Image (tube, rainbow, N blue to C red):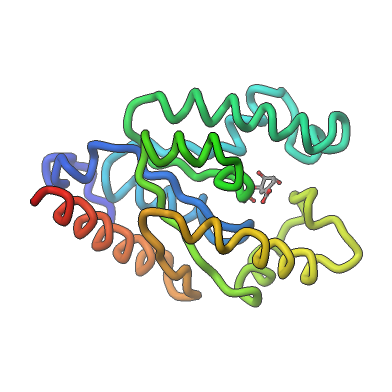
Length: 188
Ligand code: S3P
């Protein structure tokens, strides 16, 4: 579906960073890459940026320095990215829970929550064990708790899209339609 000619994409759709938020397994990275392709914008994965800055994996950061230190680095990386030129930004699942970062996302970007149900999240995250928060005796219960804790806050996103188990391009198209509507509504 990618059309690598920015001329075909309305400038408005390329004028601000789009921050994808949501829980682990919601599809932020996969959908983000495709959205970036469709809008001819750069794609940045915040987790990868944190790993590059730290010189080790997220699991290693958690293990060696603890979650608080990870969150500190995450906040710094988000500040840097959000002050950059427009791009598609896949954020880590905890990012939108930080009130300052959330305010920064609100002022610098359009936030899109990829909302998914427990079964779909678990199906996706069980493919890899790279998420330190899910290294618990009962990852499903942990995920259910995170949903309960985070979904009310994720609900403050500018746009909410259901990340359903269909082709990712369906989700990408839904985001582009919602973004177009979002900009149209604010134009008038
Ligand atoms: C986290 C989500 C992860 C990563 C870290 C913490 C969270 O990112 O930032 O393991 O708090 O939900 P993804 O949502 O990209 O898996």
